[in-house]
Image (cartoon, rainbow, N blue to C red):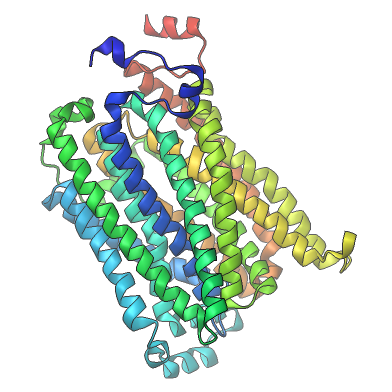
Length: 515
């Protein structure tokens, strides 16, 4: 394939929907299949984990902040350390199999041992002691301990997104994808995750309704078993396609990122301390930290309030899971549309900075609507237009916010975050990915959870904490916007050094910078 053929422009519709050259398909198609399967599992697990914790007896959304601080954050640090140790010892293909195999083994153990014997494993004496000695604001901590097996499932499901999706898949994609390809491919990866969301939500809805209709005894337990079995099968298929993709890349090395070729065979020893030092010393990465931490703080602050309202409206486990899967389908449809017509095309037309600002703007505007409805529920009339209660209206606006913000996250946010790593060297990519996805994602969620834990000590309930949550949320969005603008400036400088100027710059500006 000659260079002129590779650079041949696409037709208008093809550049919009499928900006891929024929010789690139042997790499892109397997990557899309892997991403679809891993994303399918992520979407299935995301609704299960919330249902288990939120609808369990004597539990609720109050347990989530405690799980994220006391279990999830240290577990994410541990798994990041394990990932670095494995990366020092094995090649990327073997690391993928080991880590993904470990996750699938846990879900097998949960489906066959932990959940069926839930009552047997409950530490009743410890739970009674904690209930009598801890203040009422620590109810969520007691629930976390009582349902420790549900807590582990929640943590492993949440870490699927961090470890499997970002450290493993996106880390691999950033290593084998050129910057010019990323501007075209990463929007299509967004399509993969979004179609998988529609598929996962539709599958879960159909399975739930089928089992509810045909089983009168523990329909939720049977549904949970088959959903776990589906996750395991999809994960095994992802392993198969990953192996096929690596064989293709070994046979056709020109398909990889040739810019990193001199560093591929260099053995790099990575450590947690070095990653944290690198994270704190590099301005480029520090602004990315600001973007990632801010997103996770904001989304965790507002989602807990929304889930509390959904639990009030749908207290039954099967109904709650059914509603959350309907939300997953809605997110997938919106995000698929955005992937085809907004994310990749917006990035190519307007540049990194304007694309990166879409997500905080969406969360800012939708948060105004959600909190307006939330406070109306507490201080307004009990029945509104057409007999709609404030609770239903709050759930509706919160659902709209969740769909729009998640759709934006799975498209423009993830795309802009991942493309930032491409101008870095191979060593910087590994350090940056481990620091950002292994530490900062969890740090942001833990900060949001700590905020709630502090507020629970003074306000006791989620509802009473809402005014303070709103103030903190809008302040963090301001930090997010500041970080995105500064990171965009630094990214454009590095892109110009690679001969890839920001598309938003005027032609005369690009020629002047090049000279």
